[in-house]
Image (cartoon, rainbow, N blue to C red; front, top):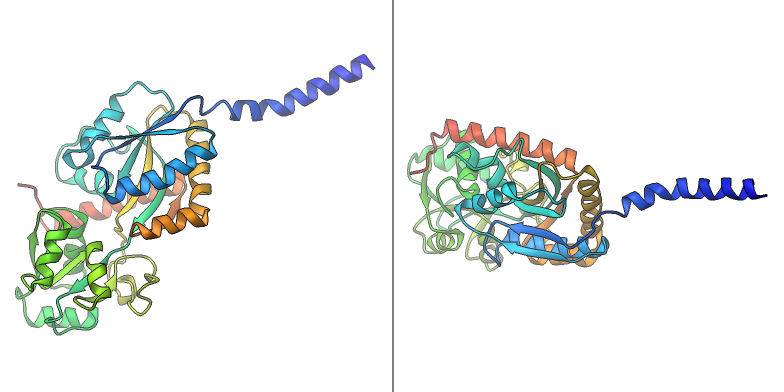
Length: 319
């Protein structure tokens, strides 16, 4: 009986061991460095999702905004921290897929970071001023070809994703437009409303499309916006086939344990399936677009190559 009891006890311990090892992380609160100012889409998305993910893991999370230099200050900070398996970094499309092609950056996106999860993607629209005689992308392209150099499009700044969307359309459609960079998306939208520019590729156009002050030709997304079901995606019109959406995700510094990455990814995925979290993400102007670590790494690689090609072909340079 004793031997039988000991064997059963040992067997039960062996079965419990994986669970014990799995539960060893997280051992303390998580720390998420957000390399952008509070209140922006990357900040909002990160806080909504990571707060719930941390709760699911039985811990709290410290949000640490370290803004500046297009996300590079926060990224460099995380890279230089001793690996503690509890520090993570919010990332954007621009931070790992665009900036690297324009200037030296203080980290190697292929070696210094590990993708954990993609969380969400901003809604955006290709919008035009009502004076533009086009109701579809095809009509816009035809008008642009018939009037080379006459159309101006605004962006949130030089080499931002809102600039590169316009450059992408020019390259794919074989048209010429003049790019006008502004200090942020809102000023560019104000210029579009005033008729100073004729087009914009941005999320900030959506409220004005809803009121009829601007006209949407296409959605910059993989799916149609639920509030604008009659507006096709840019891909549906035959353009924007390579991707390039403005997404937000979570990275870990190199050296972080696979266990920590796997468990955080699982918690993020579970958080994103919750109806209340999905609603909050939607209300923040985004949609849930979860990717696991393997698919997220592939997405980063593919979009980095795509943006590198656009920047090279468009001869885009920072001043």
